[in-house]
Length: 214
Ligand SMILES: N[C@@H](CCC(=O)N[C@@H](CS)C(=O)NCC(=O)O)C(=O)O
Image (cartoon, protein in one colour):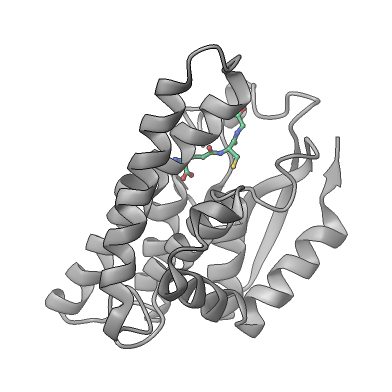
């Protein structure tokens, strides 16, 4: 049975946004059987030699699928898609489009959003320039996405794919200020279209029922 290492307890600010949700969503979409191994972040469950063998950076999510050990949410959802034959095309050209947009979600989009978030956690506000640079970077990328979604429902292919799980999660968990997405109605509609999927609704409800704030 596939084991997913996900949070059982995590700080209140992160609860509901953590990256194990990407894998839980993919598993729900694909209807694959799995069990969750609940990890208590405040109790340092991630900082053990045993867990580092699964996840070298001591992070969630990771999986052990009967000996196939993986960390990195994007690698995991692509593995699951290929294993199940769902949410990724079988032809190399279609698969390449999905991989392209998985990388874009994890790099071109998540990077500026995460940089802004970390800045806002840590900076004392004495110099407004770094924050303005990061806000401008986010708007640049959001403008690019808005153009991309002008004639598309999903980011990589005609149908919903694992790239949409990653992109929609980044656009949802990574954007704290509504002002960062409000000028981009196409991006907001795309994110909401993905999050309206029954599999996401079930995933999120089960996560909220299981994961404690600590
Ligand atoms: N690139 C990794 C990032 C994973 C990550 O940042 N996980 C966070 C939770 S969302 C974590 O485990 N943080 C705990 C820590 O670093 O101590 C992925 O996409 O899986």
